[in-house]
Image (tube, rainbow, N blue to C red; front, top):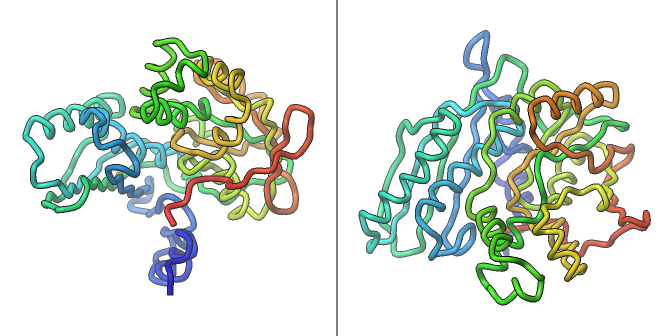
Length: 329
């Protein structure tokens, strides 16, 4: 029997093994474990494979940075702050010590930004591609962790950053000639490729998620796909307005030159920013706090009754997406 989709595999094969309540039925990106009367431990794990999650010739410092940053994105979406992490490496046998030193520098950059620290792991040799697995642990006050369950019809959907920059950055790294056809400057190209290699890392965002979100998810597999996952767990639907989706100045240049890029930017993923549902009654205070802290959260839609998501273009017509997001299988 051929492998089914990633989420079918989880539901059919591994979810029956998840007996601990804090595992959330393996329907979320992280487990939430009660460890003391005051705090819960949020646990998340991501594996990155060369040629799948990063390019083999990416700078090793950028690979280290991204490996840890993508895990912290899951913690941010739970409203948790990073506490500690483990690192497991399957290294090709010809890996040089200089490569590892630069890789560790990337990890150290993220540690300095967040105060998370390495506590252990494992290293082995492989004849296959470089494979990096990080398990990150975060802390949040008891019963304060935000999951995908909790969105209600009428809630507003906000995204904490821009969408599509990583997608464009990857395409430019694979085909530099696209810069000219998209009308991008050298600075635009540098910005977009950096977005692909170094996802955003923030601590204020986690605080705002914890204080205001009713449900939350990070955008890793695609904006449309990840919002749909949140809606599925919360038993609601959503409407997303493409005219509200925040794009960087560089991404807008690319879209003006090639409007057909829009569906790809909505579905490619690798953005690693939180999408949260905020109740309408709390929205004004939330937006005031966002402005006070100087972070980027943009309302891009609303939670609706029913199920499924509708993506509406600037004329209000429904946009058909061939694929809502990335899938490994």
